[in-house]
Length: 199
Image (cartoon, rainbow, N blue to C red):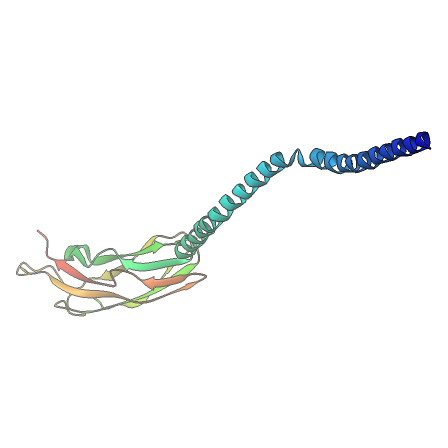
């Protein structure tokens, strides 16, 4: 009986050992794969942080890049297809002996985006029509690429020695239109044309 009892006690101790060992094996079975799986996580975390940093940098720079593109578009739009028509200056001096007064008209800005037509006219100042010059009105065309043109106004009357003060008449730009572009009248739309006697 005693031997049998001792055997039972030994069996019980063996069973206890098996029962204790089984949870440990299961624990090792759970923990070891987890450790192997989690080992590269710091590397992955580092790559994720770098990717996030790059994404934030790109996101921060995106508005700046878009603003630069918008500025470029606005600059291109403001310069292309827009021009103005102007006289060379507000005062022109000519000699009566030449027989005509040449007035230059300039196309500024975009000169390539269409044909511009500009209208002009003259009217009296101290110089009088059919006494000192011949009144004139009309239009002048600027083809694409044309930067300047001119109008010749006929002068009238002989040179007299008693002309001490030059007489003048007005030359004015009245309107401008363009097919294929936007055009406006520029800085000098009217000039005084002085007729000098000369030496």
